Image (cartoon, rainbow, N blue to C red; front, top):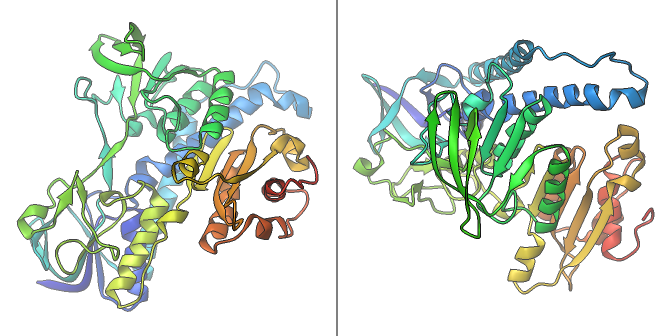
Length: 461
């Protein structure tokens, strides 16, 4: 029987990062993955392919609507070769998954392909093979949630996986759920020519986001031609030939029928624990998630769990940090994750990114934050890019000036938010950010101006 210091089940962002860190720390490490390609949902059918399609569709839309103002003549308009676009997406995915495989070899991590389960508290079963493990890290990720009355069929009713691989632009795409995934994929297909309707049961899109920023993003998406129906439930649905017929019910209990040729169900994800044999070895769960302590240890000594299996947002970067922390804990180091500084991003256009508390959360905690806002339209780099929509909003403690939350709606918000994450990590004040020199001309100057605005002294307002 093979024996390792650490056996990791699942090779997504959390699992493969945990494997690399464990190997760096001198632990003999094995990682088990049921799919042929490493990288998990994120690299194969999530974060990476969706961003490839977002970029391609944004370029297509820009060529259709904005190139002329730059003096670029595209004649009667750009043509769409969807097969080439999809091939580019797959090429990027393969390069990155091959890269992860290369990292496993470089760090001398043993890779075992197959479906794993817990044979005992110190053994992992993969097919007919048993692997002995001094420590185990569970990193099997999550799966899309289906509606009970409208199961996925992979053709008309799809999850994000199939929505990344349509062979033709839908005539009418209905997206159920106005979270990050639904809005991003809805944006892709709208820019490529589909009619898109988003149905959301909550009163705002991106429910975890700051209310002001969510409303601003909604206005932008509406201007792009995406219809958004808030406070609306899908109560029934059926596939009838080449269309899907949905029954909607709004907040006033008024019912309405809606037909589409494809429906993307994007109402969330659930921890994927099928086949792990958790109960047999005593690993406790709560509402579907694996229970862990502050050190990511489960109820069974020497078995850890990370990523979408455990509490907190289902985000790849959160899983990565937990993977590092778990490996360090196993090696006797004080691995730690600051859950108050986990950034979130919606990769629409404009992008929405935030970290820390929303204004609503501040009020729930009895805080009346000092607020600084600054618009991208007053920024020179944003004007040069032709992307002036949005703002930066900074919330600071009323007494200490410590930054409580930063919210960015605008161009490349995903690349601007790390400054704010670093600020929260080191307990920065708005004054700290305001007095930090920012290169000119850059989009990041909007962050500095928002920090200055907390104290009413923005320069370019």
